[in-house]
Structures are given as structure tokens and as C-alpha cells.
Length: 90
Image 1 (cartoon, rainbow, N blue to C red):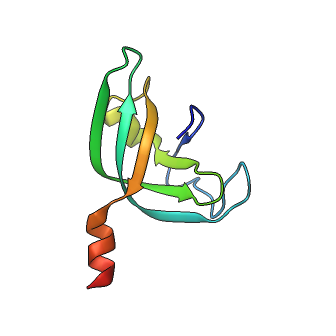
Image 2 (cartoon, rainbow, N blue to C red):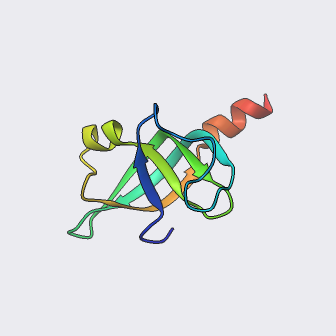
């Protein structure tokens, strides 16, 4: 994911399409990696959000970002949680 690959939003204002490219959003939970300003990586599992499939923009609730202490961090990796994928296959 590039440096602009995360957009913080609230659930109330989250659109049905990406505000950057207009692509469809995949709403799910994601396993993520965030890097802070000291270049330390932090892993989080099952973060709720929405991913724009065409441009890879990840939308995450601002309040959750604040609770997790990630306001000054950058998302460097996100993948749909395998828990969701396995549950969908069952």
C-alpha cells in the first residue's frame, strides 16, 4: 500500500463508493500493519473497514484509529481477514 492508501472516515459518512476513483468498496474486516513515525510496525487483526478494489484505498473509522493510537501512523499492508474468508466458505 502506498503512503496515501488509508482514509479515515466515520461509519456515518462512509460512502458506497471510493471518493478518489469512484470504485466499489469491499466492506469487511482486515488484518493490517501500521508503521509509526519511528518506523515501528504494529500488527492488528480484524480491523473493520472498507477497501476500494480498483485503487486499494482503505477506509477505517477515525474513532477506532484514535482508540488504537494510530493517528500518526501509516497503513502499509491490509488483507481481508482469513476468518471472514473461512466463514464465507462454510
